[in-house]
Image 1 (tube, rainbow, N blue to C red):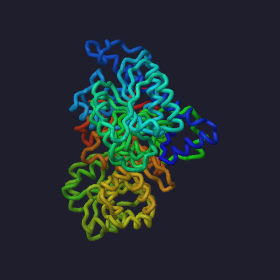
Image 2 (image 1 turned 180 degrees about the horizontal axis):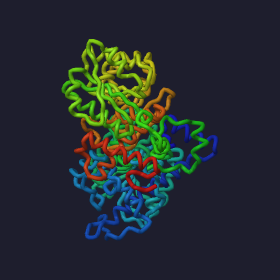
Image 3 (image 1 turned 90 degrees about the horizontal axis):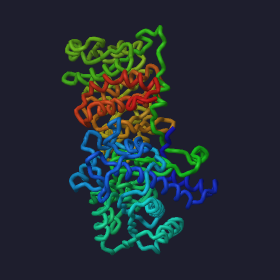
Amino acid sequence: MIPVLSRAQMRAFDKHAIHHCHVPGVVLMENAGRGAADVISAIIEARSAAPSGAAALPGHAARPAPAHLAAPAKALWPATLASGGGPRAGSVPPPPNGRRDADDARAARVRAFPVRHVPSPGQPATYPLHARVVVVCGAGNNGGDGFVVARHLLARGAEVQVFLAASSEKVTGDSRINHDAYVDLGGALTELPPGAPLSPLEAALAEADLVVDALFGTGLDRPIEGHLADVIGVLNTATCLCIALDVPSGLDADSGAPLGAAVQADETVTFGHLKIGLLTPEGARLAGNVHVVDLGVPDRPILAEVGHVAEVIRKETVGASLRPREASVYKHQAGNVLVIAGSSGKLGAALLTARAAMRTGAGLVTICTWADAAPAMESRVVELMTTSIDPDRIAASLDGALAGRRAVAIGPGLGLDERARAAVDHVVLGWDGLKVVDADALTHFAGRPEALATARGRLILTPHSGELGRLLGRSARAVEEDRFGAVREAVARTGAIVLLKGARTVIALPDGRMLICMAGNPALATAGSGDVLTGLIAALLCSMEPSAAASAGVLIHALAGDVWRAQTGSDRGLLASEIAELVPGLIAALAAGVDPLSGQV
């Protein structure tokens, strides 16, 4: 299990460690800062080990990377990830020196997506470090973490300059201890209290190889304005690499929305556990690569007390649910799926859904569409079967088509007219079976989500933010601003499993659990991609419990995008039909315990 914590849970985690486990807060701060310094040291070393003939960090000769650094360097630079899955995969790798021109820096940060979960490598660097590092601290605990980072980097040979966005008198408690330790060891510190000019910070950033954002952590719950917003503005215009501590300053650790001004980081080192706000599309964009470092305390007993808000879907968990088939299995046992989809001019959606179900292992898939569209459909299928909906006998024709089916996928391209609504209501509300409800079928319940709570059988709803917004009576933007709140509300009002599609797809279950997929990339933003996901889940429902089918379908779909990008090096141009073609190989790899991206067990 990879747990994901809310702001309140992480605060409770620290409190429990301090007051019940008797681990002093200053020790937790030291462990967090040292772990971050380890990650930053590895990044510096990786950047210093420039390719032959290329410039190293300014003022220093290039040197080969030590053997023990080969793996961390590859993991820490997204452009060199074997999976092609890092934020800049498919783009020009970052320069070996610490500074980029302004246009390159802006472009890189726009591409800083998706997030990667990378554990702390544990001091992989060779010292002394050759880098100029600026650390920008706030007066709170995040600033205290920054002082720890600054002290460790200073001890490892880096040229470190700390800017405090307050007066030193404002720094108290554990943060003050680390402030004093850094200063008394000879560390350079410049105070920038409100009203002070920011030109010294701008000058330092112009010469820096990287900047560490230690202004605000997970405790922030109000918009950043005034002087501190100006400091963040300076950080965001810097062309050096930006590394945030815990979360990018200004990011709401729960919703993932910016609270006024927010730092746009290239990398984020988060402490203890992933924070849920890092796993939204906007949170991931602002955080860049995410490195999780532990706090030096056992997780299990503390998590048992404080809980967690969500879990990351793991390849190992999905692989364990993909059991080998018996030698005697026949097509009806392999899965009998009915796809109720398509209409004149929208047959492609039905075909994509049905073919995805076949590629996922359903033994028999039938497309059920309108009688006026059925002839055109029949001319385009080979392995698939077809049946039609008689508009004059909608219920009777659907009942005949539903007989004997294990699972139903309904909605893609079906239409939004009254006959489509009648068909959707009959199947979704009346048929006592397993159903994946998508696209037009979801739209027919706009403004009446409670009707879904009365449905017979079990439902998996697969909306994107626009469809979920229509269901709940709000805008797509409002859904994106609080994805977790919106998906929880949808579950409460429908009683269904709700799968909110998008970057960092979220699955919310009626028992209160949430699952988050960290795989996937922008190549999946292509017409028909959601239809393929619907077919995937419908086929998996034939052999799995609904929650397992939903999580397996989401992960396999996302990994297909990652494998395609690894093969092509591109973050665009993927066709939805190509997603389905990759599914059998992904199922085989996951079932064998092999990482589809690395080829390693």
